[in-house]
Image (cartoon, rainbow, N blue to C red; front, top):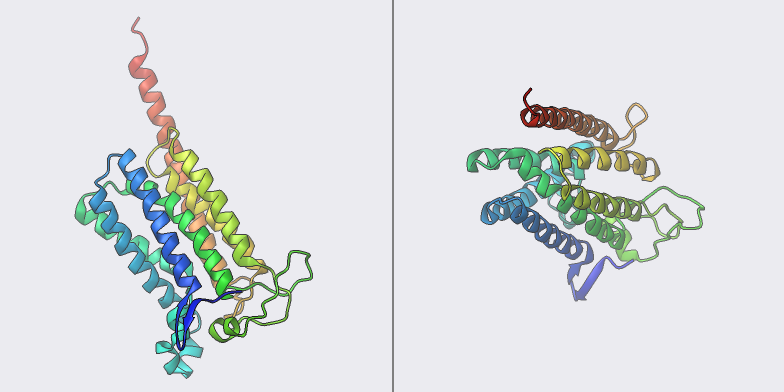
Length: 271
């Protein structure tokens, strides 16, 4: 594909980084729009988005290093290499670190926890959809070999140099699988948040839907760190986030029913 968007001598602008930046701006626009609709303070929401983006990048790199600790420990110079800097990292690791950062910031700024998370969820899915196209352009997060008619074959030696993607071999386009899944999740969440819901339901839907999609896609993806008890690290994390999402949905559903019953009792005619 096209790992380098613009290249002048040894300087280049990576396509992946550009699309991640575009994804962040698109996510921020959607989030601010939803925050305004929910009467949340725009400045604090914007600051939260920036802090979460920085924490997410750091968390993704940290989990990438932890998942491949032996490789990085044996070749410690890789920690400060250009390849490590440009690598996408582990999304779930970035999400966990960003989520913890968000909770701390929201508590400090007295923002409503679940309501704020809800307005962020659709934007996160949109940003992921755009960012995964960047992964496809760079060649990272590639799939396993396949003879499916929709398989993709990388030929650009720059992609192999930057990400290690094998050249000349038909592969599952797992990056596009996830991009399409994220776009569909975004559409559902953006539609759902406009309907009546209890606080936290949109976050629950995001956690559940993305976890299922990522768990399935991982079966078609090449895993440099190998499998552990038949599943990748990412799949194990997806099971945890799926459980969290389902638990949140069930809890908020019960809350919704309880509120509905309370309103019904309060408005029923006296006899």
